[in-house]
Image (cartoon, rainbow, N blue to C red; front, top):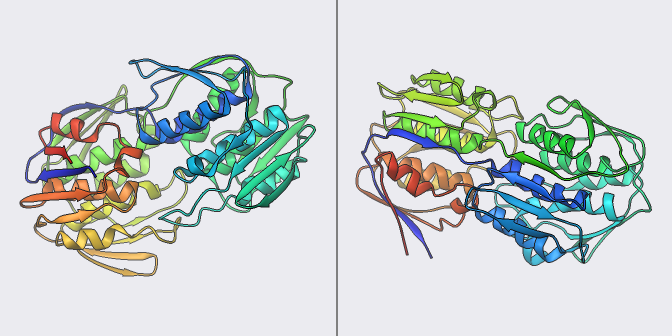
Length: 417
């Protein structure tokens, strides 16, 4: 099993290009099921989750081609199966996003219930309730969601809780429904807005994406389109934290500061000099980082996907920080591994209290999930000695060539078997 080997203590400097967003690309790949015409997506990141989604779509009957320029062209004209099996869905919860498009266009879908998630329950009941309100008949049994309808009908939906994938699934389903669909208490994340931009290019009528109320007027059919996936705000945030922790100076290219306001505000509180200009974010850290309190919440507040990275930052910061996790009930699994590196962290329910130490000490650690993996990489960049991170397949789900990008900035990091 592959691992990363890091030797800490090197300052990061230079420039790096941020890849396309994983969380934006995955629903867009599923949106190709809504039309029989080709959909071209640029800036698609080369990640394990993207490969899994393409494998699933290929099994359904979607034809696709890949190019070295991060372009994926999908054609769903000859879909042969409306079945998403457990062996693929279990590896990636975003696979549930085929449900809405298949049901809306074909009137039928059978999709495996997603498996358990290391960081929390993340139920799919919001997806199911919304589709049922739009006229779908849904049965759940033997680990599968079986759905059918003659034609989805527009409805007024109010989600019980904010769900990004729930919002995306229902929005895609509503594009081909008869009449108007109103979805309230929707997710405001930039990835939802980016999906809406693609759907509008395909002929959908959508208003309100990026607010807590989205209105969709169903159309008879959607068309092919071409769209460039937004930059990955979590990858950008991770590299910014890495730069601050190593007291470095890095320029991020193809980065969108509008999607990172809460993260940039936190880094400025940590003492970083942050400058934004024409798609470039520059960070300079000329002093030891200061402790920063964090409380996760849906966009536009502080993202849960950056919580672990800020815990790594706070572990070497001056002062004490409190980190509150309000989104997922089990997202502190990186705490124990950071402690192995010398971090002083106490956990009380959904609150972690971090007392900064002067330095971390290298050790062999194990990644437990995607963002936990990132926090261990950040800690390894500053720890004294050689840090070994095991089970990095988690990391490959959401970071494109992270060791190559960090090495280009001066880090001592390599992949090993």
